[in-house]
Length: 312
Image 1 (tube, helix red, strand yellow):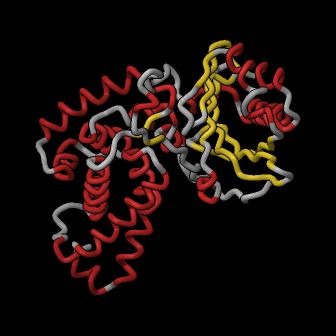
Image 2 (cartoon, rainbow, N blue to C red):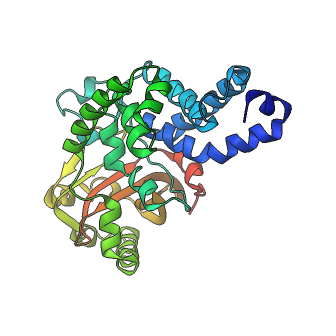
Image 3 (cartoon, rainbow, N blue to C red):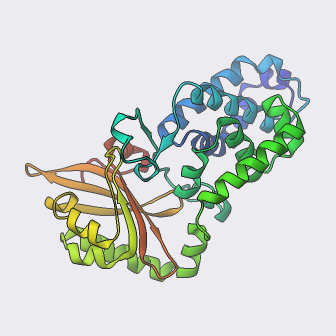
């Protein structure tokens, strides 16, 4: 549809935007590593699109035009701030001196495909954040969204040869940081019944404050972190020693949610007789069902994003 058609039919323009809003939001999240930044960037991109509507000449598809605007909006954001990371990605000696912005979890889309969930897994999003911004954009546009090298070149105002070069470097870098199996592959192999049983055991162990039961569900070299805290722990023994001094020093309640295509929980803590929102707690499982990584994102502002109440 041409810009003139959109200009003469605001409803048609809104329908176009709504048809792509969810996937554009996920695209901004992959670029920025933050659900809140993604929302801000998407709103800015849609405002830019509206203002530039009279310059859309229809030579490319409306979809690629929207992605061009959204991608460049995200690149503008990335030019103003550092990459988002997890505590495990930081050098422990330098961490306290580092001005850090933290990766955030992303709520699952119930209608998302297997591939769409795979492309918001924490390991993948964390790996993306280590790429230079232009490499990140190319990899997402080419591999996740399926644009051709020519289309990506048009989106980024570069050449197809440059896109292919950036893609090769990006893929090599990301592959070094990803596990052998995606979490979607692991969850599929475990099956719904086993996953449900794992969720129930984990909730029960945390809700009754049972350190031994929590630790028994961990892989031997499991990791546990709590951004924005810099400190993180590796191995059952280190986590066993920390839990009674940290999160299990006060009562907790866990409720299941879904984040990044992974098993996750909203957690609440009891302070002065009142239950308060505490964290979005995302876990990664191995093929045996053991927990190999747990990240508790300590940010109560995330609860409405996940449709969670402020009290359990």
